[in-house]
Image: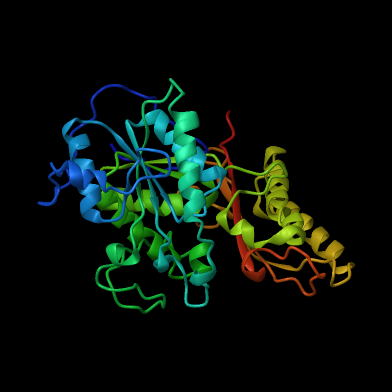
Length: 387
């Protein structure tokens, strides 16, 4: 019933089915009875030029969810923090192919931001997001006969609805109701951002309890997040299947991310260094190398060449960045490996911080919010070698 805790898949697909789904086993709120008032329903907020409701409260979601539970229709959830891009829309398409109803959540989760991370500068693009979702449903999902369903609702709650006891603390020792998944949440991104996966797991548990999805859709770009969520779903017996879809990329290989808007033109050109380093390492593995130093050595060479090239440029031209980590890890635990087991494969991942421009040229596009430091992550799956 649950997704296995094995290797994150590039595209974990479940064939569409018209068979009735098993009845949900979540407890329903006493407030879950649909309203019989037509005047009340006419006041429901909707996406522009559509009939898709925008739900702002937990009770509203439960009222929306109840008839689909009784009808044994499947619901897919696409969790987002807004600032939607093509990667998010690809997840909605995947959910529509496999589920009768798709819910997109739009919630900027404060618990995912550390004390030194600027929550206030995160791009907020609600009007554009709402228009993009309405357009996707109207122009693509409605016309695609291969889909099992369509976008049926958007859940966009205020922070007080998700955290009724008060804003979650961003410090490591903050008090509150949290979900913590260790040790997998303590390595890689968790080592650099110690409260990040606590925030991810907590908000995902809340969303799963509220929406009660049969399937939830994540992108491969956030590979550690998918491993953490799968572990949480298994350990807490959550009746939701975690589906992981391929990373959406720009033509030059840069993984799509809401944070890319911070880069500006100059840093955007150099930001692809991480993907190129990982591709070089993957090619080394494809060429028969299994040892850590051989595989990661090729990635380090790519990074070093870019660093040297940028150092030769003037401050008005160059881009500076720092490498947080380049990892070669076990696909289940994300613990570092010295030798790749060819029967299991591995996860190649990395994180870099693109530093603010030293000296901007007058009129230069420095990026959203003045071009602050931008943390970028990426990964590639090294598939097992077939005998």
